[in-house]
Length: 182
Image 1 (tube, rainbow, N blue to C red):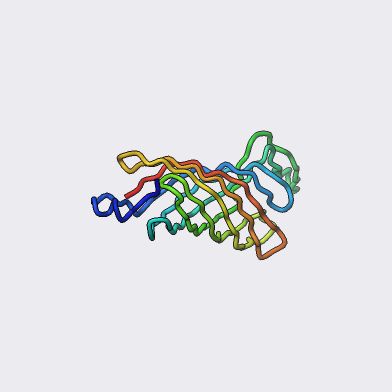
Image 2: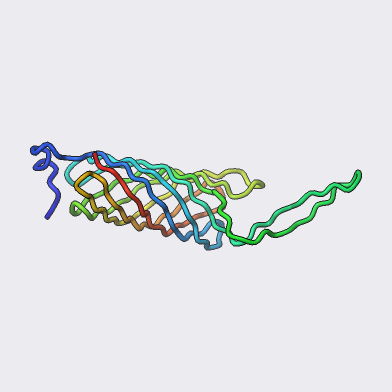
């Protein structure tokens, strides 16, 4: 059965605003190499009609690295000696800040398609200037709302970024989170 906001609104219970907080496990390519990534995000959306809603969010995406190169500086008298070493472990380097603007088409109360642009800033390394890009995102989602307005969400999507520099980016991700409708 399709969601009918007008019917629910006549009963005084149409929730048009949603705030979501989510984690963002993903796989992406930054500069040609594929890596597992991790992110966090927050999103606000507003139901425009029975089927359409518009949202905006803020995300921080970390590129995961198993090892981290570190340069150590040691002073011996008047002489400074540099040594390159590798720290073992799992490191998260926060590289991408993203502001997605999403349009959602609701097939049912729980299932929707989403698409829209994403404004991205990529901080690849200290030796490379920040790059700005515009991405395009396409996905499909599922949300389950409980009686108190709290909801669970699952939103897999594909994103590609057209950056201002030479570094292109694509991402296959899943938003897993909780939200609140009011």
